Image (spheres, rainbow, N blue to C red):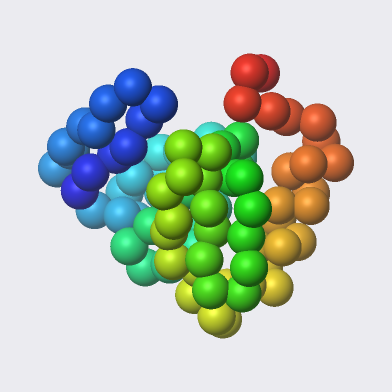
Length: 83
């Protein structure tokens, strides 16, 4: 699995489930192959999430409603990329 950070791409040998279980608040599994850090979401629509660096990741249609709720909750808590 590849983890994309602000400065590098890191390859790790772990399952998505293992990785998801180790992450703290602020991450969302938007598709079977993607976990996104809410701090770096620039915009989204019903099929994809655009990150601050311009990358697009898939947003599964069945996850859209759950993502919107989680993202709004994240924004309400005032947590940003710098904190």
